[in-house]
Image 1: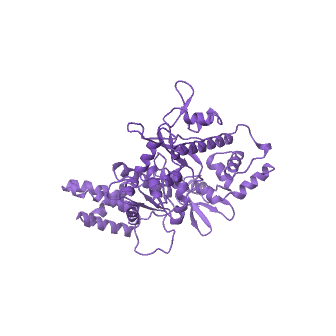
Image 2: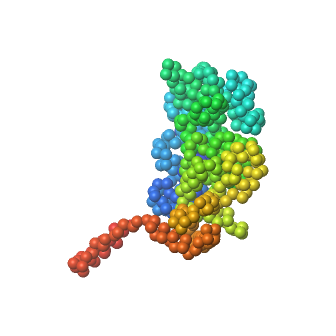
Image 3: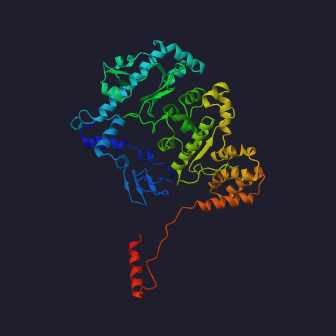
Length: 491
């Protein structure tokens, strides 16, 4: 325990890794002994933000912002120095000196919420394992149909919430205040007064943060007419669904060792996959993929190789497009997105900003259903052959080519491909794709190339017209004065 506040500050600094701290907000790419990324403090289009781990500092060579890990947290999270130290002390398990403790602090509230959530997870889990709830057998039967046995139930701490209104509340009210239980999302205020359990008559799927702490729950309906199908915890002091990925705690070692991650849609997609040996998979918690999710994953895979494995229906296709768009947005400015499968082994393991591939088995099943019905080995085969996102997009469009017969219809159809082809920055690779598409559609490659060029011209960013301030009526002296003044004004 730190005796003084200064000692605590030093203990916090000794435990901080500036690369880990900055990586929570900025995607970094290593070059030599320095890490580079887009500056979070100004609109940066080219990586000008450098992190030097040997010195424990960061500096932007464009806007000049610089400092250490603590200053970075203060600036990006808009926090006071004391609050940062207290938050990091909690993270590292360091005790704050008695002279600096505050009664009723948010830290104490968060600790109580975490503890209550952990006990709730254990309570639900015990009811399922010991078959002690009125609907435990129904939950066990449901899991058995999905091929989930006791070992997987234990690994993911699955549980069951009874149908009664206050079972959990009666268990926790002895040790926790109503405020703690309500803010943790475990209970709700009843219209009749008092409190009732938030989750009732459902299969419970505990959600852990990357450190393994229980912070929230997903709850699946067990009865046929029960609505909604999934009920999820709301955001709280200890849970932010935009920053937490389901399964990351159990997947992070596999993501590191395989240097890749599979993004899925649902809880059971992850559970089934990890249960059958596909361990580097995660899912968002009842929300769409966010930039924060992508930045979180980039800390675990150096090559930033990301597989998208969503449902193959229309909604799944849209989720794939949206997910890829967010990934590209996060990595913009760090280099090219991989857009071509080389036939040779690259000398550099960090050649691309990221690599996006799509796993889409033709059977039209989600990962969970596919693995249970066809098998994990078949899924792994599709994973090994997963196309790059650009190939997936082009193939998806080309698969509908036979629907368009007349020249007008074909021209309209080809217009769908033009924006995709225009994204390919490398001219040689673009020419290869254009030739392949032209052959498939039996059209002139030059015509497609012309359409791409026309599309690019029409989408050029608008540049403001600059009007010179020197006119023909200016005297030679006035012109000289204005030219000299412009030297001092131009940054």
